[in-house]
View 1: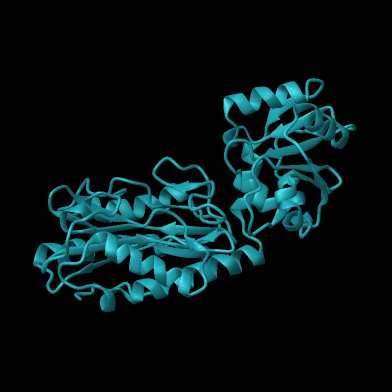
View 2: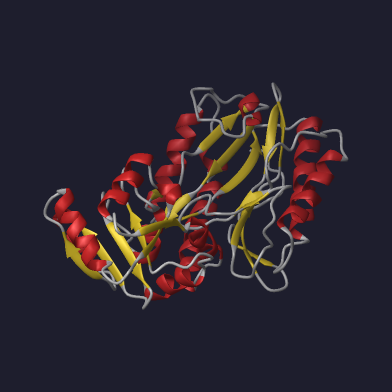
Length: 362
């Protein structure tokens, strides 16, 4: 998509003649961002962004048919021979003396190899340009995130019908992810977190064999991926009953999320929004229980460039999509997190995730 090529080039803070993205070792999401390929591995493939907004793609015969679906100049390389690759790249970059790369996605060995292949070019890191370009979503990106969010919301709305005493965290995770695919998603956007009881106090827990019992907290942090775009949503439920301590914790997290929502709009400072939520929790009996940032940008990656924490310098902008996810975690007892995906507008925000946020005993 040439509009995205232009957007990346316009986001440069360092002048270069062209930008090269290389899926060396692991795929670079920016490759899929600029080409808009929604399927295919594209291992070892390369995209080159030119100053005239032209896009060159170098790939293997395995991806040729998929590659030609893009608005790009496609060249198929029939081998992994360095000489063939060097010739192709230098031909594409014949008028370029400086080349920008995303160093964040290149291993040391890939970077040094690229320097050898382009020995007559100067190579500059332009990774920040991709983050800036992806910060504001275009209409197609927004539509895909909204679809992923709708699928995710639907899955979490089904949790009350899915849970039963004695089931494992992994079993509930499987049911949720099965629903994602049935509802049209590519699959999960990340490793789903389903945590029962005391495990809900572990923010980055991996679902295990813990079985569900009456009185347990059920924390589900999940997200569907739709045409490569991600949702990220958390709901916390209580099984059969919720005691006063659990209810108080839930109410405080929801109050913190509402405080953050009241500040969301174009130009709001990310750190200020985080502080509003943190202050609610720290002025309660759960002081110190909110141990992570309030949220992060969302897009072709779950963590799509910028965060929202106490030290974040970026301001929110209309067109950005972010998560808002305050939480309280008490080791040995449990935790509560409520997370929603929202699109920032000029004067406020729009919910993309729409499942019920009130406390629910199931």
